Image (cartoon, rainbow, N blue to C red; front, side, top):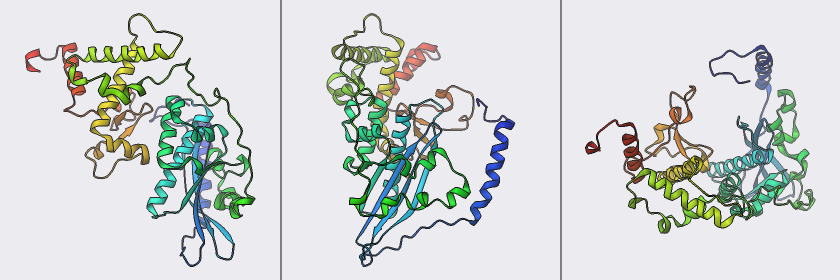
Length: 374
């Protein structure tokens, strides 16, 4: 709707919102059929099954226990679920489905650690493209897909992922919504699809279709690649920031290295003076490199659980990773109309070489202090 955070909702939103609030009262009469009392004597096998799905409005995941008893009976039980509103920035449906899959991996990892569950975890998606992304090699994908598939691989094993029928995916309820009354009576939601309570040989046999490279959004050798990855692996050999005394020179040299890599891998060559976007990419690269060296453990925690450890020295700053995997901090200006760099500033360590070059450059540019004071 394009409303500001302090603007009153128009009637077109207010009316359905009030109806939704009124419907929530029905939750008081609902119950959640959870049962976790398992012992080695009364079970043969226990598994966690996580389903994910997405729509243009939201994406989410739901997790179930699957318990096999000695008498052959199989029961399933709802464990937990989580959904998120789709970003305001328009994303393709496969990318939203991938975000749902990553949320699924994170949620199952959290449940396993919380319940000290060391049994098998299985994952289900109804999107063939996402399934193939997860089964494939992340390095072949575009940066958006590559980063998320790599995170999924760190948390799960690709063979544990499967493709399920869309109509039997309980996470579909999270992505499209459902009334409270329908939710209370939904067998699919509380216990998962019927085949989950059968032996595996009776599970739906779905042909996993081949997906062409274009559908997978692969990077071919004639298209742009993530040049930064080459530098990330060999930065110590190609670029040593300690040898630079000028911020702009550092960015320019880095940009020319990126351009060289691009030109060796693409038929369309970049020529002439450096463009602003090339310098921006170089700057973002060094920001990530600097943050990785200073806050590596915090970044790893944020990638896995979206929060830092309680022992972290930057916990009070409320850090988070933006869509470029850059560490930023939240504050009182979060809901303001200021630019992103002002309301959610980038976090840099005070003693790094990059921070030193950046501060020196900004002081020179604005003439705020004399050189001898720096």
